[in-house]
Length: 357
Image (cartoon, rainbow, N blue to C red):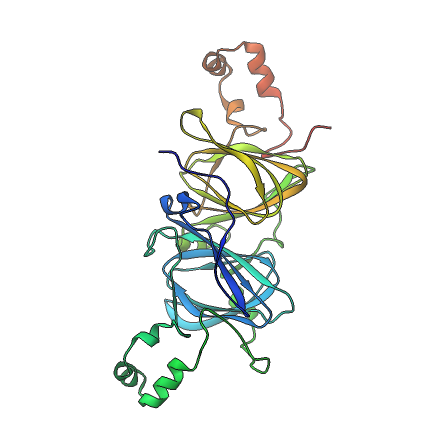
């Protein structure tokens, strides 16, 4: 069965004066439900608050723009951690963790979420349960249950449950002050990609920072890894695949470029340009390659394995270079000289290749 792998932009699901929430639909991207993945984007305006909620999915949030405050309550212990997030930060949110998000800055606060929906009510979609607001979980309980649970009278219960007239995202009054972030709370919860050395850095080619369960242990529980790639103008990213059967979910942060994906029986299943703000999925073991346009291209990806292994088909770590010359000669039915040429070319770089002069 053929699956549409073309990149897609998100759809606006909700909006208010406090901000907006966008999703990538599994109708538009069938591989989301096929791979049990989810993707969404939160945009908070100045003073916007995403009301406290938990989700049926584990996910990774990557800050695309701005600065914001986030409160997180782990399912394992109801102690609130309050952290400041800025552009380049990655935060990992465990299944069932309660969080709230606030923009106290003077510009938009934008976060893209990529995660696992294998335990979700609807595969391919993050479902949220809000503690407050007109769609909050407590609005569904009768006053009798809540008066007994909270030891309050019915008037107090109604005031607590029904006073918030907004839902999902609200705009706070200026005089209301939220908790200040605590630097110690970021330990093990937040990982900044901008402050880490590159794992690969090729002049005029590209750079990558990789986060796995080795340098961000919480990802072991989430079951994901992630990377941020910056491909220079007109440079090429080697054809490669995830060797441990991970699915790759890629969001284009900046710039544009061309992508080709090859799957079963050597069939090219996608070829085309990708633009900033679009998302695409690379299925298990499919081979993908990218070439940046003249402005370069930057993307943030997650892999459905906490410690991924990537195999490449070009560069000095190419599988073709490791293959015995005699086997390559027989397999491709070519001359020994051509095999030698292939295996001695492009030995300078790994993964990223600068454009020809």
